[in-house]
Image (cartoon, rainbow, N blue to C red; front, side, top):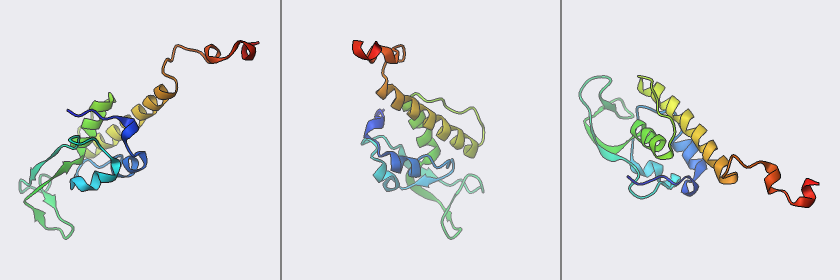
Length: 135
């Protein structure tokens, strides 16, 4: 699996395209182009409708799509959470899982950004001060 390096991601596009609480959609991989995911990171595969209301994909005009190749957004959220070391979700519904995963990913990104600024949480601010500043 290709690892996700947060510093290489376009965070504005990530927020708009990925952290959208969608647990149902299958997107064309081009939808994520501006996010700048590493090559091979997106879980692109063929998705097939099963004919049921919940197990089928629907087009913009209400027609059933029998088969398409794309990225199942909920699977992508799980992959991002796993790659970043974020908590997963224990919820059952796809929409509930997506919302919880998005929140957990946001939380983990904040932790990562903090770790980049202050890599050793055991250090106190005083340890970074010159002797003159401490006096």
